Length: 222
Ligand code: GRF
Image (cartoon, rainbow, N blue to C red):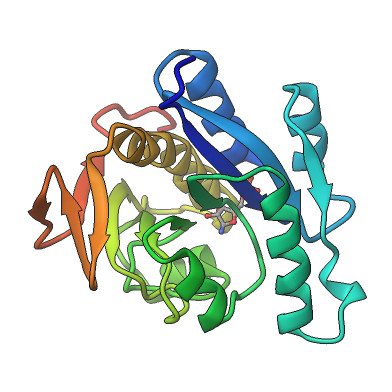
């Protein structure tokens, strides 16, 4: 590990499967980064155990213990300061962050969302995709700005919606896509290839006119 290794803080609320995908990519030598801490706003989040098992420091900042979002975020900032990070990665972090928080971390704050944004921002994306009858669904990684699920898009992983798909089946297919997409985007960031300038994503110094697209070529769960 070199001094230039990207220091990443991961914020979670639950299961932590995206966190695991990131840790696995680091362990496999595909992502030159170090997760310096994992913070959950939920004390029982399964991802905390997963982090601890990987030797990553964990912390809980329980939003329920604070009177308002500003107080919660002050505690979150204090915890983040304990292990300074170059990049904050939201991975199933189910709290909306304030415009102040975003402004402090602008360009160093990423999120993954289980839909092809701008379609299906918000919750219950898989049920809504099925109800809408779309033929494609997927996952998006974006820089976080004050617009919830509306920040500049970096990359998307598209998956097919198949006849007879259930919500669970579709969710599992999208989750596998997430696990491939997030480490890839983080690897770009770690290599210094990715930046945010104003509201424009730069990859290799060039403005992205549209998010980079990935799609599954294998029929891995047919
Ligand atoms: C993922 O689908 C993520 O996109 C969404 O919440 C889920 C978190 O899953 N925001 P996990 O905790 O990473 O397993």
